[in-house]
Structures are given as C-alpha cells and as structure tokens.
Length: 59
Image 1 (tube, rainbow, N blue to C red):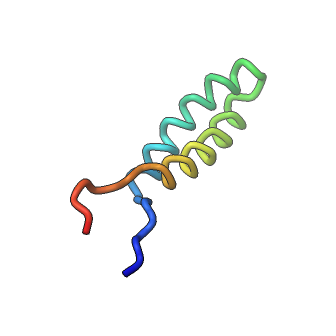
Image 2: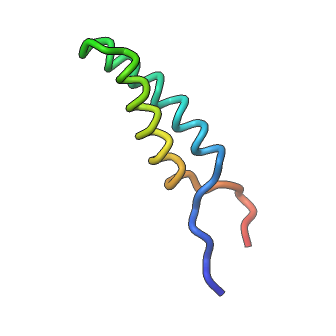
C-alpha cells in the first residue's frame, strides 16, 4: 500500500493569502506592491500546499 503525499487545498489557500500579504509589504518597499503580492501568493501557496499535513485522522 502506498502512502498519499501530504497535500491539501486549505494549505494552498492559506499559503496564497499569507504570501500575498507578506509579498505586498515587501514589494511596496521594493517599488511594486502588486508584483510582490502576486509573486508572494504563488510562492506561499506552493510551499504550504506541499508542507501542510492536512487532516489529522489519516489512514
């Protein structure tokens, strides 16, 4: 039996939200808040989608 990888949609959403917020602040300091927010959302979503373990009760 193979194990499923630890991924879920909530991590994707939370990563996009947190990444966009952090990216907007960093991007504002660098000159472009919109570009920073978009880049931060993509990176944050990718990281938390992969890292977030998902539901507690797994078989």
